[in-house]
Image (cartoon, rainbow, N blue to C red; front, side, top):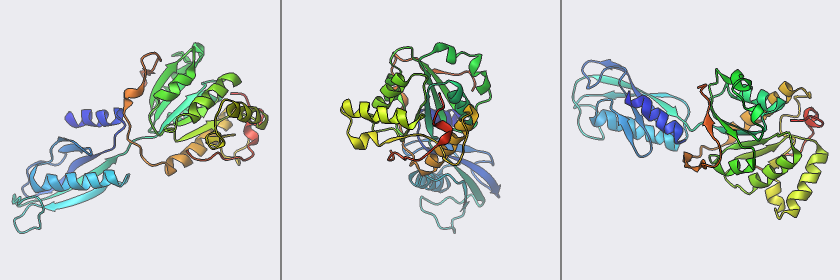
Length: 305
């Protein structure tokens, strides 16, 4: 079906759209209930009947895209020469209800380090409609057996196995991605932080760790030429401070809650998927800047990713 392919194309290109469906028909109409079309800002796939009816649907759909709307709505159009019309007379004699369902660009999250905490975080995030990137320099953390817990993922999951220079993945991520840094190696974390704050298209940058670790990182990032305002883009410790505990699942829950808050604040950012460089492995699983916030988070003070 053309509309299914169109939705998939929009999702892959991280572009917003609207699915328009003929919800009900009274009397005569050019298409039957269930007919669909997909509307993007610059293109339409399928048809719900042409003429004034379809033009009204396309016009309102594009308004919803501009508004970053997420709530479906119903549009009623009378097909009569006596009814008000904007795009030509359509006098079939019936009345049609169109259901307009926004297809927003889903959030994107990159987890750098799929250790105990990272995997727990991936398990929770995979239940949400988003794009999830799992990045690790250790191949044994990304085996099919280990990631089998994501087999029922709602999210679109991508696996990046990068034994050398995992920070290269930072430059491949879609604009608006939320980067979560929690690798097994503090040197790797530092390199990722440096790469992340040099990428002004990331939505947020979160780092797991203690205040002592962050003090060392701030000094190192400054020595490497990063200005204070760039370093301040990093939120550490990441998470909700009222969710306490050092167990991986508890930390993952805290980080997820923090990310969900950021999702509601983030404006939709259309992006192209063309940025994934060929020298970094990005394989889809067969399963299916805001300023830094400094606050106590006992759950992470001594936790290791």
